[in-house]
Image 1 (cartoon, rainbow, N blue to C red):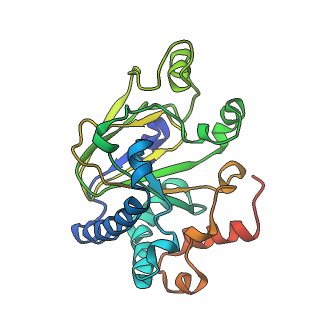
Image 2: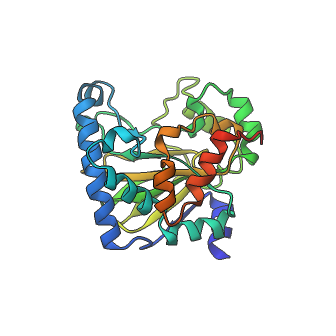
Length: 264
């Protein structure tokens, strides 16, 4: 499968027009309402901390007056064309972990920063490096506006940092994490497209090229002890919701993981 080989070599894959305009519109309306609520609750932090994302968009607190909309959101996030694609690429044992929304910082007041997602966990960097071949943690970016919003270094899902990359990522020896790095690729996407990329590859956002960003990221992967510990039951469908979701395998596996934690 050509797309599987592309991902294996590069650590990312762009799929054009996977979602229909009506699906994008439905997602966008739900996300706008959630982001509006979040912004009211976190306006000071958004400005003072120069925040560029929020997470847990499926949390019940965003649906207290919109119960049916939560079910619709779960349905859209597990659209048949998406679950089929992921199964073809990575097998059936994929679970739903969380969601994030990426937006520009207030007045573009923050520089994009190179990172690997789990560097912000308490897990030692050397342990992350050793376990990297065994972790599949994916972002599925669903842009709700046109964007040139993410920069990746192909192949870094299969290897750890060069000396320069480490110095920049961890801001060592006088370097900053906003410096340019060689061999990077800037990804352009249109609404309806998706970008699948390894959360542990070297990547950073881009704010200056996009007057407005509204990028919904779906976080999925294979069960692993390093990532499963951060799975939050509040972000999953209830038993009643699960019964009515058509493509429920991602959510079902996530719920099973909480009941019977895996040791892999």
